[in-house]
Length: 168
Image (tube, rainbow, N blue to C red; front, side, top):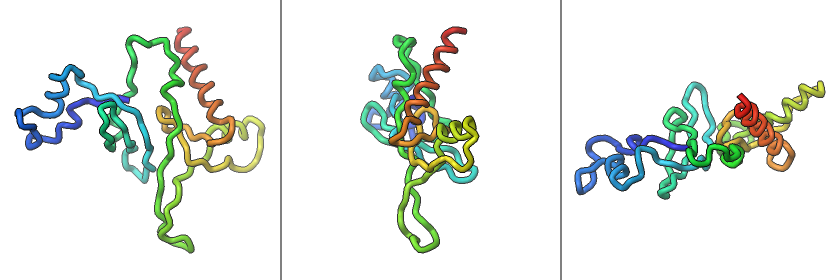
């Protein structure tokens, strides 16, 4: 993932002792206009709020970022590299129980497994897919079971889409 360096400027009052904003110092050090990193955590999305991620940037900082501020980083020199290398499983997050017998306890945010749901529809199996607390770092709408073949199915789908795009 990548984000514009100007995102970290923080306004006019945050200049360093040389009078430079973060983005100006970043560019002067030869890094360019982008900060690169990897999604390490996906926050649960509530209501109409934007999707939030915890991103660990290459220079070592860890910050929260909105979906609109992040882009998928494309490697110019490794354009034929497999995109599934960028996909990895991240936890959806935690939430505190508000009411009931387990009030105040923290538990994992869970969603229905995307691959299991597709498989159930194809095989006309009744019932819901199992809950999971894991999703893809690149495709945030894809939820996968941790210990089943669902994650491998997602990676295979990504490879197939990539191959179809390469053919066109």
